[in-house]
Amino acid sequence: MTPSAVAVTGSGLAELTCARLLAGRGHRVRLAPEAPAAAAGPRPLLLNGPTLELLRSLWGDGLLDGTWGLTEREVVWGAAAPARFPQPAVVVEGVRLAARIRARLEARTPPPGRTEWTVTARPPDESHRTHGRRTLLAGTAPLAAGQDQRTARLATARLGWVHLTPLGDGQCLAQAMVPGPAAEPAALLARLLDESGLGHVPRQPPDAAVAVPAAPRLHPAPARPPSDGTGGVLTVGAGALRCDPLSGTGTAQALRTGILAAAVIDAASKGTPADALCAHYAERLRAAFHEHLRSCALLYAPAFPDPAWRDEIAAARPGEPVHRAAVPTTAVSPVAITGAITETRPPG
Image (tube, rainbow, N blue to C red; front, top):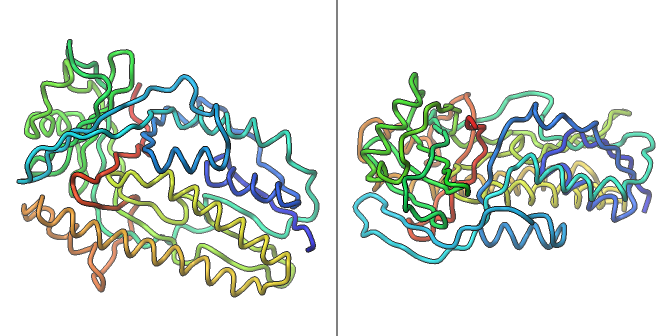
């Protein structure tokens, strides 16, 4: 094996995971300078059981010390009967988690040499294929007195779903998904809270809310092999594909792209043709993304018969046209829903 020199351009979970795996296999890894924590803004993540297991297998124990733990989930999805079931999870600030991971990585990063590969969550171009136009609304609010701080809640309204995640200290994160842009996100979020039957959980609706594009997207060329003296590029994390935040798989999916990217670079260093490895990487992501779209269509179609959702559901079906826009997607049966992974930056 000839060790490769790899530049990792960011501090996302996928990028850092790829860096750790490569360094552990003897490759030379150069990390980008760490961005100031304040520049990233708050980004709470709700991590469920499978994601927690994957994190621990990669990084060991202690990463989640001091985080807020949840024990149950309550789901009222469309016309289905209400369901309440055990679902252990933790809420962690994404910036803090990335900082803890980076601190573990830097001590074992070997010095860099000539850069043969770049691993990034920010692809050189933004030519993502986006399936839909839906928007995620998010804001924080105080919980009403006596409300359970260990149970996440999911319910639907005519225009979309609503998810409440307790954050500890009497606060909760309120999220809602709607089928298009939202001009007044705070007012719309308050309305959806009431219509979903969850309006009594916060003491008051969020004073402010953000609205971010939230349709699933896939980069058509997430891997480029080295060519003519130009290093190869592997796009990981949300830069490669983003899933619907209802799926609860966003963080795990990002970690898996980092694992797969490390395997590509390691195999190339042992003589496997890089172009074949890059094609395999792209195909693996494409297959996962299309399966995600199919599950989205199955989940949303019965819950949202409103005409406003018609295009969103159609965009999740094979052969439908796609839109150039922005962000996430996934689905499962209502009771199996694993949680809203929050990739937004809600106001504090």
